[in-house]
Amino acid sequence: MNNFLCPKCKGHLRVGDHIIFKVKNDLKQSALLLLSPQIGNYSSVKHPSFEFNQGEVLEFYCPLCNATLKSDIHPNLALILMKDEEGKGFAVYFSKVAGEHSTYETDGESVRVTGENAGLYTYFKVGDKFKKYL
Image 1 (cartoon, rainbow, N blue to C red):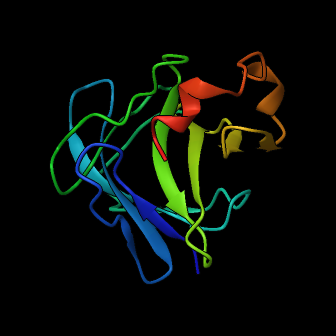
Image 2 (cartoon, rainbow, N blue to C red; image 1 turned 180 degrees about the vertical axis):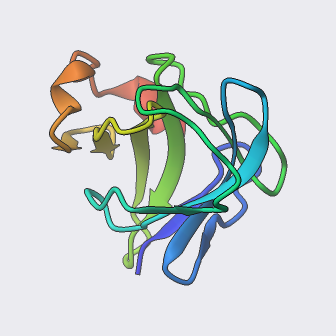
Image 3 (spheres, one colour; image 1 turned 30 degrees about the horizontal axis):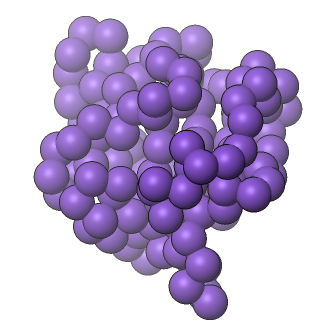
């Protein structure tokens, strides 16, 4: 089972079968959003009263320390950390755009790209920039 962590406080974001985030929509309304921990599974769970439109850029935050999870490589990507069962660390970038399926998992040496929209952000390079997160 992979563990997912906040890059700021290193708090655990995975509870059971979900990764839990605090998100804000364009109207600055806040809610909890639960995503699948399975890379490439884009299912989500939210309260029915929290609304956003396809194509809207949501802002992702750690529900523990409230730090922004925006990445420093593109404004449409969020960043969390993942540790696999062997304890190996990865940086996981994913799209903050509602309905856009793109995820990038890197160990600093290579990038695993997932999602039908992943071609939108594949220009970033692996290397030392990513190792600071692991």
